[in-house]
Length: 468
Image (cartoon, rainbow, N blue to C red; front, top):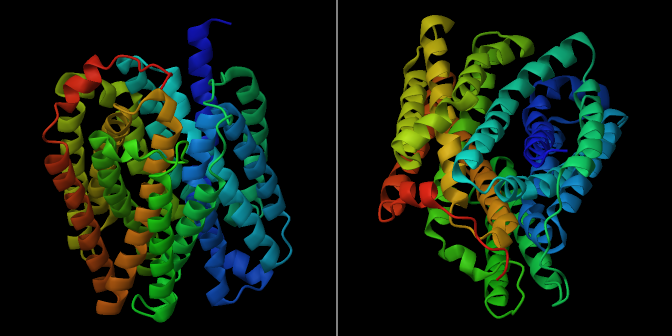
């Protein structure tokens, strides 16, 4: 097979893997009332259908990325897809609450293994900046569009078939991804395990992330200043400090400290976490607002968000890549973030009587245009100076910060808004706080990335040697 054709087909395969992960992040939300009724969940335990997935997904991302660098990213990606697919089928056949929670945890673990290496696979396959931008455009469409598509698919499957099919739908996608991935994805030459594996570091960082995410997602139930929350978050920070100390002294660490000195990675990753906080709030709060405030069904809620997905698709069709080549990723990113801030501001000022068209429709279109203009530059900037030997680590690090930061931001904003306001005013406050988070991302871009000519770095970037 032609090498160039193989690369683009491999891109489609890894995007299918990412699509399963993104669909699963939202498809469950609209089915929760049906799952609660059929499996006998209490209201308190129902949140674990979501939390079990988040804890496993956030806890293993960094380890997955580094393991891919060491033993081969294709192996890790396929292992993750296999586990995710099997866990999805098991979740679909669940007859009790405990079974589903275990299945969701295993789904999160499989998703972390796949997601931890996907960006690294793309960066390795597409080393020329122009081609990488095109590949990242496709990938960003899947990331951004998969969440709203999950709401639509979840509503359709739950209302017209039953909730079990929100999990069974992953089976054909997973099988196709496994078969095609084994055929089309080329394995990288891993750094190898000859110098030993940092097992202690893996245990420390995984435990730290899992405790941190657990503390975050349960903070709404126990309170942000409760001994439960403070104890878990404090323990997570303590384990993280021990991990950093350990990594700084090892010759073959799980996370080489040099990764923290890459300014473009750190700045873009911080901006990405703030941006996704704003977007997570929009989808979460927006779904509640449309269903409880306006009486939308689950399927109608998915349709309402469709303009956002369509605009992301339009921008990812090549428009964002061409604009980035013309004006530079930093300038395009700033314009996109400003558009998202404007959209969230419109939503915060839309009164209870405001019609879907033109107010909400305009906001969702603007949100999609801003997101479609932001994701590609963020991914491009974050990986622009990461050596190929550390691509999995850089990808995993960026995804961990995004996932944990987004979970922390969403939990914080919903907790603050519901404790300080009631009814529609709580929705308004949440949108205002989401807009402030995205505005903070814009400040990070202006402040942290201002001293390097990032546009020149990306346009002229030469492939980095695999050797250390």
